[in-house]
Image (cartoon, rainbow, N blue to C red; front, side):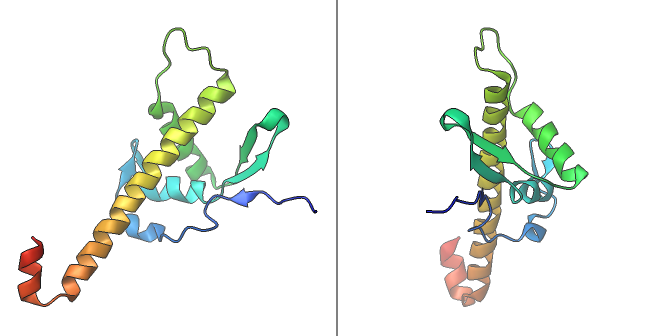
Length: 126
């Protein structure tokens, strides 16, 4: 069996970042963070660890780093390695980006659904 290629995070995702408008996550533009995430590539590292890499324009990379810095504050007695802390912060940003993007997509879908209904049915939906 051949070597498996790293899987791209957004390989099975279909969201249009242009629809995010002025939304922000952790003080950074959602469209920049989402675009940076779409460039993630995962591969297996030593000892069962995962490597995450990406190559993006500077503005996306800077936005991601700033969001990660805001995602978690260090606390006394934290025994995680710097790499573990970075990964935890990255995952916190990913969760917030996906929650926000999903909420926006759901709101747009509901608005579109309501717009297609006859006027009398729209009132019943609230």
